[in-house]
Image (cartoon, rainbow, N blue to C red; front, side, top):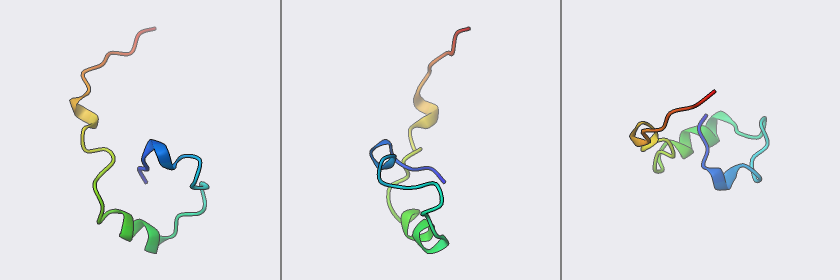
Length: 43
């Protein structure tokens, strides 16, 4: 489940229940601009 960067320290990997996930998807999508970042990874 996508989470915002500012949530990384506050959410444990097993702390998100299905109820929490359903409530979260009602909010703004933290991945909405993911494909707008035109960035290349280099070796």
